[in-house]
Length: 492
Image 1 (cartoon, helix red, strand yellow):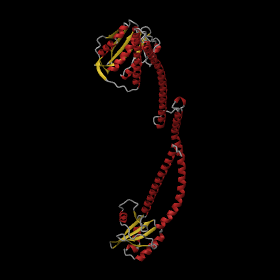
Image 2 (cartoon, helix red, strand yellow; image 1 turned 45 degrees about the vertical axis):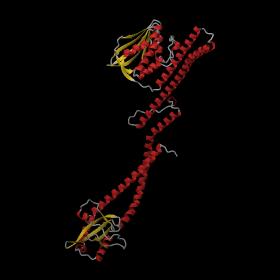
Image 3 (cartoon, rainbow, N blue to C red; image 1 turned 30 degrees about the vertical axis):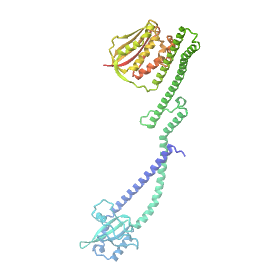
Image 4 (cartoon, rainbow, N blue to C red; image 1 turned 180 degrees about the horizontal axis):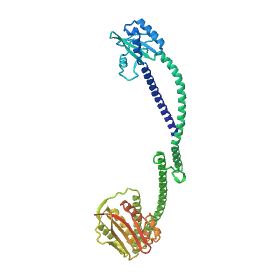
């Protein structure tokens, strides 16, 4: 059988209440008995002393055991709640009035009697009960002397066996009825209050559980389920838990939407990439088959031209595959950085030299401003070289013959260097600027070298700069050119 939290809490609190009630009842009964004993003992504090002083048989210190026994019997008839004993100085019981076999002890401990006579302890003081080996009772005691010689003690048990039996019978009947009525009333009241409180306390938990089950049943899509709106309460842990769950549901739903969007983008990108891969691959295969089938009939000029075209398509295919692997590697988040300090000018001139052949083919001019940029930077030189190469490659493809490309370095505050790659090419429409860093996005006016462009260069550039704790921005005007900007950390 499944037991809910509400039921478990109810059972636990009921058991706790019973334990507390039993402990309190025991402690109350004990306190009541001690209070009653103290009052009775204080009331009969001088009882034994008066009996010893007023009775000639005890006053003279000479006793006749038979007469003393008769005296005790007469006193017990007059006061049935008392028991009378004459005890020797060593504690031996010398005389008493009781039926045979009633007295179980032959000797009592004298120390409590001495404490009582000298009032060395606070009341109540308990002494040995001659009629029970294990019991102790309140008493009154007085020494008995004969010519200043201690003969023994008059030991009076207050509330003897007869008193106890009658009192317990009466008390048990009264207490039983009172206890039952009281206990029944307390239990009923307790249960009513307990059920109400537990209902109040567990209702938010029940609501939260229903929200969790509904959210799970809806496939963790928040827009398919109505979650409870939890009030703001800093001191209510359940409300805080409910708010945290709602926030978690929002985050899960957001991440789910993001994953669905990413999955859709990946599928679209794979579709585009498969087309881009198929195009150079088909061209490469076609020209190689032509060379294989008609190699003997082709002129030397045709043969070289077909080989060049095949080689160009192979390079394009390799470049696209390399970009796909690089983008996948960056998306994996397992890229390590090799940070070092180096002169920026040296890297810029090396990159210019790398692109010199392509610049000459299109008669483009690539400038570095300022020419003497003596700045030291702290970053990953390999990844920065890849960023600049992608941006310059992009500028070359989108700049007309005879155009200008500029790498401009500006020193900013907070030890920053702003790096700009500027061209006077075709430019980008303003409404397309927000999408140019998406993988496979190509601006509507991107017409130059379209067969060599995989559409991944700017996406790779942005991811590399984020790894370098930087970011990239773009400014462009149609027909006037484009400027890509990012920053580096300067080393003094």
